[in-house]
Image 1 (cartoon, rainbow, N blue to C red):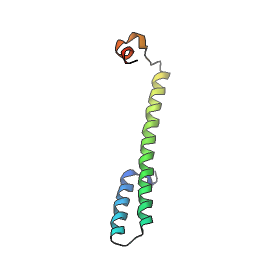
Image 2: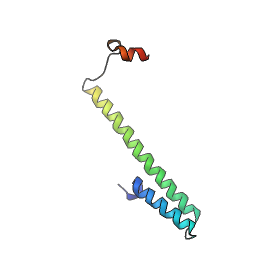
Image 3: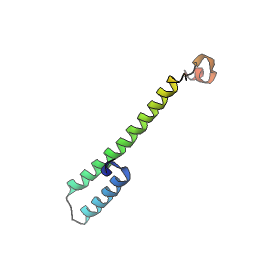
Image 4: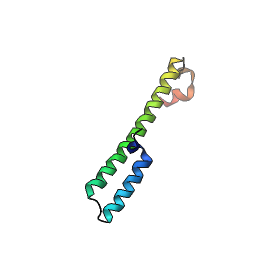
Length: 79
């Protein structure tokens, strides 16, 4: 994994860039770029979690898992 796409590393870079901007050492565009990298990293993490959840459901179904709504009154009541 490229270190720039790690949420923890990206958060640290964002904080450092914000501090450097307030000290007048870097332009605002560098802070905005660090913020963008943080958002990309967070999005990548959430996308991976969603992919893992979908894969788990596909695996469960492939192994014959599932449920019948009519046989479970608590699920039928939600409809």
